[in-house]
Image (tube, rainbow, N blue to C red):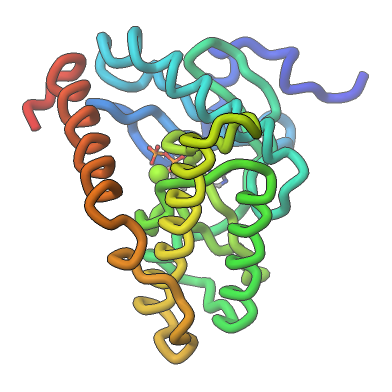
Amino acid sequence: MSFQWSDYSLDELRSHATQVFRQGGGSRPDVMLIEFNGHKAVLKDQAGADKWFALLVGPILNWRETKALKHLHEVQYVPQLLHTPSTRSFLMSYHESEQISHLQHISPDWPVFFERLESAIQAVHRAGVAHNDLRNPSNTLVTPQGEPVLVDLVACFCRGRAWNWPNHWLFTKFAQVDLSALTKLKTRFAPQLLHESDIQAEQIAGKTGMAIKGLGQKIRRLSRRLFTDQQK
Ligand SMILES: Nc1ncnc2c1ncn2[C@@H]1O[C@H](COP(=O)(O)OP(=O)(O)O)[C@@H](O)[C@H]1O
Ligand SMILES: [Mg+2]
């Protein structure tokens, strides 16, 4: 019989963890490598967060991220959703890689890498999703072949239906934020590739945008205070 991830329960999957990428706690999930007879996948489990956060916010975050991955199933350089073993966890394809900010053994050809990264971000946008957390470099991975992998879509924003103009307007702003993250990464890792037309964060938001950004941060801080043991 052929191998299927969906044949395994969450407990069975967790008991086959061979590496922990992120130990959960506070408002953070467990992210771990799972191996079964040579098959590899990454489990992201919100149950690793503090109890109340995991219970109340975990299913929402898991729903957001799996929904985005479903929208992006044909987009290259984004992990494939493999299985949802519980309302708080999902399993995705594993990509051997290093975080762009912690490269040790991989030295990409930066012009090629950034070309691929830009086309990956544009493909994500064409599929109707803005990533929204690419300014954090731990969400851009680099494979030994110098290809990008975009992970962590929990903060994504979907374009929504055609009649929903406010949503569309917000989507264009968030899509530009993704492109400003590309500028930020270039500035840090390959400044020789910067171009005048690259989008800078300050150009995007105006007063409304900054207010929205501030509101998002306040909501995040509040939910952390309410549902986790962390005070800040
Ligand atoms: N599909 C994947 N393949 C390989 N490594 C991954 C994958 N998904 C996540 N990782 C690793 O786990 C880390 C944390 O995952 P992420 O989804 O960003 O969790 P968090 O929401 O806690 O930031 C990433 O920075 C990356 O190093
Ligand atoms: Mg992350």
